[in-house]
Length: 67
Image (cartoon, rainbow, N blue to C red; front, side, top):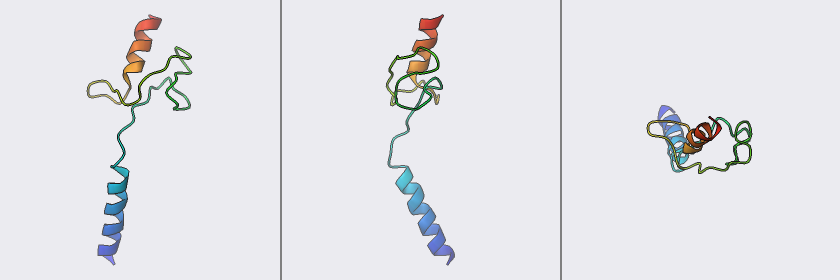
C-alpha cells in the first residue's frame, strides 16, 4: 500500500514538473501577461525572470519607467 501511494505521489510531482516555471509580475492581477495594478497595459514576457528571482523582468522595467 505504501508503495502505491509513493508511486502516485511521484507520478503527480513528475507531471507537474514537465511545465516550465512561469514568472508573473506582482502587478499582474489576473496573470494574463499584462500589468494591471501598476503600469497598466504594459505587457511582459512571463518566461523571462530576474536572476535568482520569482518576479518577471517586466516588474523591473515598470519600476524604472514609473520612477
